[in-house]
Length: 288
Image: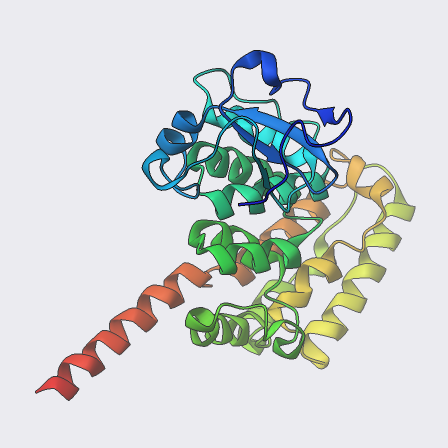
């Protein structure tokens, strides 16, 4: 325990919410030197990461240094009281991840749950960082949600981010997603596309058929991985996608193309369960 006390120096910065007037019997200092007066019984009851009262001898005058910033602790300690949790909706991604890491470190389950809910909103923008966090703390459901956003990346780019226990299932899922669209399926999909037409404008017909010709060349003649199909088909000018009525035949055909290629594609969860089953059978056979 640090020999420093709450009265050993001149006036200090103190938390707006957790100050001496709230009756907290243990004092924490953040990394940016803000003091927090917290009820230790609350920590003992709501957290598994702080030592129980019987194992500490702190007094309100002793200060326990923590590595987290005051902005993180101000939110974190609110989860140790029976009250409405703090609103995290407007928290930046970095601030949210700082809170999430602290919640994991000190094992505040309510805070962990709140952070996981908010983190999901950032998956499209920060998938790699979220995969790393999920793997480190064993949040499998979050891994399953973030996986589709990363599955097309080369394994060499994320090999050390994928949790070791999921590397084989991830590799199998990655290979499936990056396999070429079967030629037989592609041939069926492009059959009769020359009959598609816009109901209103000839120049729309010209645009769409030019696009379809390029897509056919990429998929049928050159071979296109399944993982690249959405990018390929989403290259349509938004102006033509807004003309739902006049370009309906083209838009519906494009959507059908996307759906047809994803039929039978298994997700990461499937490969994880399959891997567990195979390894379980091997373990049983080895034990005989």
